Length: 309
Image 1 (cartoon, rainbow, N blue to C red):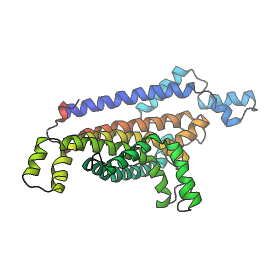
Image 2 (tube, rainbow, N blue to C red):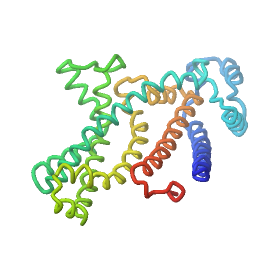
Image 3 (tube, rainbow, N blue to C red):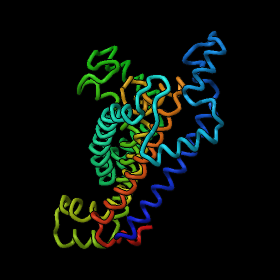
Image 4 (tube, rainbow, N blue to C red):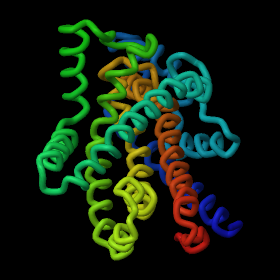
């Protein structure tokens, strides 16, 4: 167990270092000058150089990168170029909104996908199965940047049931959660259906039915317990993907989370904030994978953490 956690921690450090290097290089390759964004195109050259020197942007790129890594080693993410506030403070301020949206989307996806997948598997080849798979196909095909405006048009502008944008209570959470969770619900429903169909063909299921167990007991006590592992794998991967998808959804609905903060910072060329946002999302991916591996051992005791690599 200790060796497994040590290897996982080493992988976490390696992933974070790789993400740090990649985001630093990419953000500095993006066309545009943060000084020009702050002062405008018509600012005096002397003013530009003075501000560039004050922010440390006049130093060679390797020197800036070394200072950035040194700050990370001390647990410092830097300071915003525009607001002058600590990046960690801005991330802590925006993180609850992203967590709230992600958990709401995950809850919606699970509550919809599991009953839909079970129903499709139990009625394989019938109308319910075709309906569920049609929904799944639509959910996978429609991107968030299209589904979001469509939901706003129908439920906010035409019906007036929800706010158009912002974070103003439960009603404002519904459409972003639906937009973000629809793709995950569609994929998870297909996985539940496929995994359950495979398990229902096993000999122990036929044995359980031959012993006189009812359909509910066969499904919930035997079939689903053995069909959970691939579904759990998918949910773990999709939970990490929700954080990436939240960037688009938060922008569409003006949701004040990490995703919208990153988009705003890219537009302003605020390098430290963009780097902090990407590192936080990368860390979330790694932690979700860690939790998924731990959940494997809880769902199926035959799996040993030490041999899960």
